Image 1 (cartoon, protein in one colour):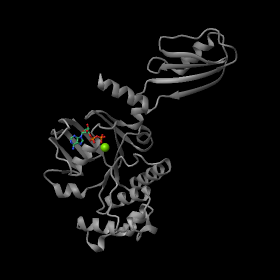
Image 2 (image 1 turned 180 degrees about the horizontal axis):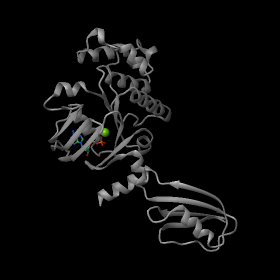
Image 3 (image 1 turned 135 degrees about the vertical axis):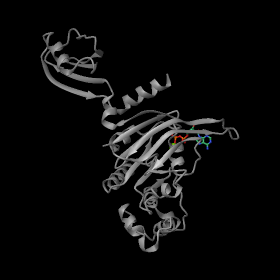
Image 4 (image 1 turned 135 degrees about the horizontal axis):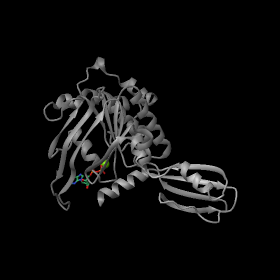
Length: 313
Ligand code: ADP
Ligand code: MG
């Protein structure tokens, strides 16, 4: 049986009307996909691809032009209340009233969602995002990283089964990025379905079970991360040899073959057309002994470049 969908999007279109100097813009062009329950799902795409537009439609902040979206089975038009209750959104921009404490920020948000006092878990949430000791500090005294974590806690006050983070690590340093990745993994391990948008390939590759790629408002891929990375057809093998290379081996499936040192060669081949065994045999057939072999797989970046350039063509 298929995993039920946490979010289900069908034929979503968003056309921004021209305003001031900004021309009309087709920001989402017939986008359809499902986010399976229980995953960390990545919506990956370059700046301007349409990621925030899609998230803001789910959040009820942007009106879609056409298409449908369901959150936890609730249609965002026909069942607004339940759809809203099923999702927590962490916006790209960090904004807080500087005079509230983290505890108050969460209590206010819980009030907005109608969470009864007895059911509130502000302190527990602050603990979850590692801010327990800041419960009563003014929000303006928090570091950038603490503010981001507080935003995540804020999105969780009504205990939604799905949380969406729009570019959680854009412009943050390496240390904070690692902290946020850890937090996202902890939340997911606790049963929350996580959707995050990012333009960092590495982030999507490290963190996400499945990745949808969006470019110029169109969905150009949607696959388990491992499969997506597997779509890269290039593989590189580096060989250390026991003698000097006089003549480079050649084969129709080689994309590149070069001498990188007196006794080393690097061969890039199409893994659909040959394999490492064949490559090694070919080199040995020339009377060269192989001392060491290392291979390198193409990564998500290769796939991404390949897909986005195809889509542009
Ligand atoms: P991303 O989040 O992937 O960077 P956005 O969804 O923010 O992309 O933007 C997608 C496209 O829509 C961009 O070309 C952007 O300039 C345009 N856009 C975004 N918001 C508006 C708006 N309010 N009015 C007009 N165009 C917009
Ligand atoms: Mg954005």
